[in-house]
Length: 135
Image (cartoon, rainbow, N blue to C red):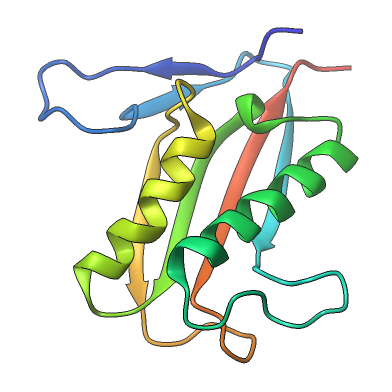
């Protein structure tokens, strides 16, 4: 099934590795997801100290939450990637994993460095909103 999400390019703006905007048609069902955290099945934080591995685990968590809601990554309309670091290189490390997971569906996204996240040893969290055709 094709996604209800339409990515919008802004060719007059600087080239970016994501769409500048996205829309979904009237009547779409919006899905607001809690921040996807890098938690193992037993509730412990995965890969302490490893930004890339935690970002990958966040994507896996995000995909599972989307599936329960009847959606996939291609239904995501926007993301916010939170990284507990003030070093730009750490943010880019996490971003590269998230961007690769979304592939051609390069949704509008915000990448933020934050001081701390909610779980012990947590370095990455991904917030997302998705849209699916109305039911």
